[in-house]
Length: 241
Image (tube, rainbow, N blue to C red; front, side):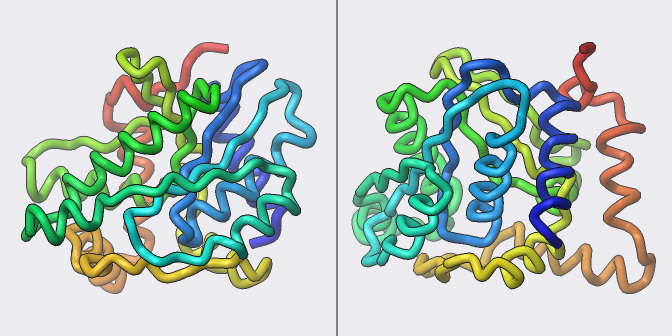
């Protein structure tokens, strides 16, 4: 996928769900993976020509691992986006002190809390997550399997208590296209050092979808259509312009 295509998908999502308003300062959560770095490219590119002016702030939450962020720092400098690393001891708390057997939920809450706090400290009013189309579908599938309900996250979520708005500008982008974008633009991706990486319910949902797609090609598009068009989820209704 070329940058122009990425910007087209991103702008469509931003316009459809009115994700960006004049004067926004948007924090981008940077994990070091392909998704968050693609989002960084997308929003920094959109900023150049979008009719509503907005600022960006890249933020990475280090769980306490020895990570070299210099390649990401260099990329942010090239894209003219300020970059901040929040140092934490989340990994130590979860694995060494609490010895969690299912660490992902607690880790996610603590990581999001650290990101939100730093975003507010830096004057941001919105946070952008890099969830893509496949994430939308996989979350819906996990909800059906483990909760018995048709549910997935919203394109825009207002956190009144935090005074922040969460946006997901990559919801129209396929993960396979993000992989292509990463390779084409040589994004400085690093492997997640967490010992729980690759052993999650989301990984199971991904494998299950791949198996279903082998028997019923096109299942991802049909499921996404079910989320956005057929199922009356109020959070997926496009606001009136």
